[in-house]
Amino acid sequence: MKKSNILEWLKETKEQKLNELWSEANHVRKKNVGQDVHLRGLLEISNYCSRNCWYCGLRAERKDLTRYRMREDEILQCVEKLSKFKYGTIVIQSGEDQLITSRSIIRVISWIRANTDLAITLSLGEQSRETLKTWKQAGADRYLLRIETTNQKLLEKIHPGFPYGTRMDCIHRIKDIGYEVGSGIMIGIPGQTYEMLEKDIIWFQDMDLDMIGVGPYIPHPDTPLYNGEIIENNVIGSELMTNKVIALARILCPQANIPSTTALATINTQSGRETALSRGANVVMPNVTPVKYRQYYDIYPSKACIHETAEICHTCIKNRIIKTGRTIGTGKGSRNRKL
Ligand code: SAM
Ligand code: SF4
Image (cartoon, rainbow, N blue to C red; front, side, top):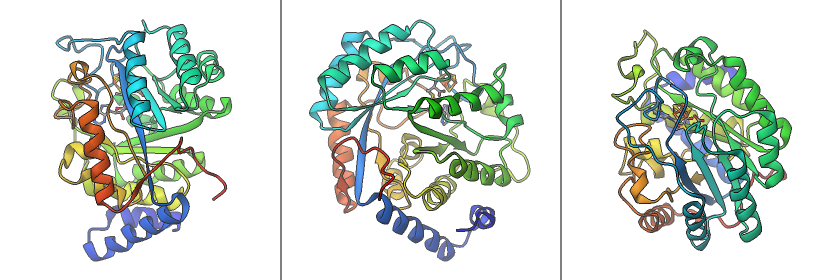
């Protein structure tokens, strides 16, 4: 795969030609990360957010959303459940909640470290070097912070008041501190062109990302971007386009862990997860958030799996993976640089 071919693939429409891309991505996936699909339990610990991203239903200015913040004992109960399911990783995610203290996160990390073999992934937004270091020292392994788009003008438009450089610096800081680094983008943001996507994919490779999360942008009616201007040459936030980015990311970053995201399962409930697994993805993130909170983690509408319990999601996802002929990964499923 030459970098100069990326744009051509992004614009390719012929099914027969695209089959070559899917087949190459699947081959590279098999050779580098094998047949295992790693399960990462996703726990959404708070939907409070101090920021106002133009695309997200958790934004601070949204006043009609019921807000929740899980207590530490509730979090630990979910951790125990997830351990019983034999997931190798917990992903702790939230809005940028100013009232979750760094100490509370340290207590949770320390408890998980002392009582389980789980890898700990954090996805708690942009944080200072000091905070990120403290969490790493407490035992966190990985950090996810999507760049969303590497185009400065577009990113600053959808993140009002937050400079591009600050987010980019934070991703570099995560890497310097020694976390496994996850980042990624949304596909189909109003104002996002094919050329921008091409640069995003090259950036994944230049950053040597350990985890790459890409999902379609799903418009939320209670956000300013809902009626965002679609420009000429705007990328469509379709399943097909997302799968193209997953396949290209797999070919250019062969060892990365790449999830088949919930957003894909949302736009195609029947087979969104499975299709991405056959086009380069090797990770699924079953939701383990208590059902009473799930509906309030309303980042986009009609989110998949909001009424199912952790047990139902666990059985459903496991069965879906086994039906594809793949195996369920055991252990932490960290990026393996040796293979
Ligand atoms: N607050 C943290 C952050 O922004 O990094 C973590 C939580 S945030 C809800 C996780 C991800 O949700 C974002 O990185 C973004 O890509 C995704 N997201 C938010 N709104 C979305 C939308 N309308 N469509 C698709 N993905 C969305
Ligand atoms: Fe908050 Fe993250 Fe949503 Fe932005 S994307 S509003 S930081 S939860």
